[in-house]
Length: 67
Image (cartoon, rainbow, N blue to C red):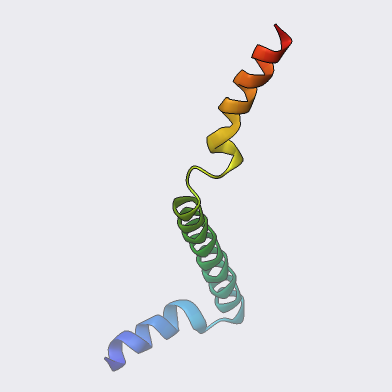
């Protein structure tokens, strides 16, 4: 376990610039994963009630009204 921690420290946290890059890259990846996951959950809960799901009904109705 100490060998693993030592190798992680030497690879990612020993130099300040590398640590800063690791922190920023990790934060970006976590934000991207969280946003993607929460959007998928939101879309599954609200399926059929969003504009992208019902737009075709209103577009057909508007075309029928024009004729």
